[in-house]
Length: 557
Image 1 (spheres, one colour):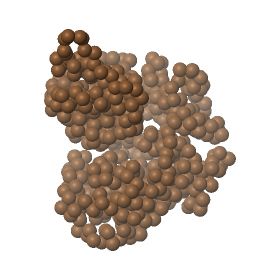
Image 2: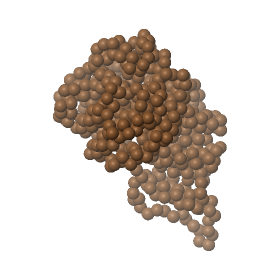
Image 3: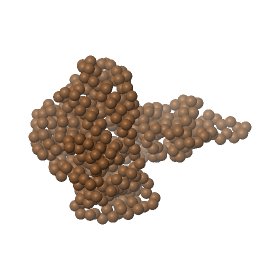
Image 4: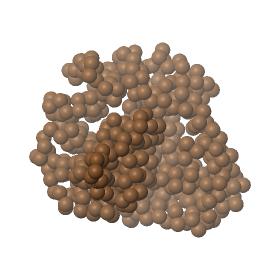
């Protein structure tokens, strides 16, 4: 069997835990009277594992790989396949298996590519880039590596290094689905929206991943009159071969255009249909129990007993809050200061939390995993985190991580970085939730697919933030979106003062800032502050009563 299988293996893996077996585990065919050699038997099992993986019988594929490893420890292809099986639901296990595969077969470019992509997923860009560059040394025209490296550079705020990689890939294969999308993403991040749109239109013309191309295309501008693309999107939605993911993207594309055109009822119908197409579900009761556990664990007494933990550095800045609450705008204002580096949305803190057992799925007693963090361990974890931040900007006085859901991690931040700045972005509750609902978030935001669940989720977020303000009095700066858009300069000055830095007028012209933006707000933050998003929910008042009812008294805040 050829060990240099392309990374297309991963596209057969769906998110979620490995399912139960739906049929018997297959055994390798053995010719009578002629026992297979160990290598032949391994090859037969791995061939079957590949077939099972394609058939979505993932637990059986895993069992066969483990059977090979039991007989042939460190078989590189078995390790690699296990990495692809884990990569959608356990990032750490995927990293371990890919790293072991690389160790066993260091000249295989696909193994280095997959390890690099796994590092990108957890925001570890330096090792990701190292492995992808090595893969390119091994196979300079491997288009998957060129595109993956371009994506890593874009996320690492180096989109200027991404563009020539995508251009080289385009010369190798003009119809590869990742090339034009990657180019458009890098160009959009740089604010070069017209150029990004041109590549996406080329992709549509060539029938390359059409739903994704339309979805990204409509994000490159705000429409004031109906574009010809709207009717094309509606025709695509009538395609009987359209899969759920394609329907999700196309409905959101149509909704975005119709929203721009102020055809709100039609827009909301598409957003609703897109949510239904996604098939995402969210267990609000499990999440509520997890918030209970966080509140019960991180008490004032618990934190007082751990005074002196962590590192006193003032470099880390965490911008937290609900998505669509102004986190990107806040980061851009701060990062326009010459002493501040914006790092975007980082998964680093979440990795630490997962490693010590602070997982959302662990809604029971969290005191035991948190108790495992000794003073010595807290200092080691903090120093490792600071070393990671220095990769972004060694000389920066402040480095901003704007992962919104770090609002769940403020207790851990307090243990590791008692002097960190925490900026809580808050927005009118209904506006915030509506702005979330009209976005095509991934499965990690599955609370966002049902208006009632979204309102209940907002309650849990609000409850946890009230707790953090009680246990960390005076630590958290609340940045109200409405205050910021009403008086940009005054609120921006308060932000910079909270960071402990002298004022710089560049913070008023955040939209001129160089650098990459890789969130749904990338078009808006290239514009001066506008007030049209305040009380935007009134455009959808007839469609969102379920949300308003779920928010209850928070609907007025």
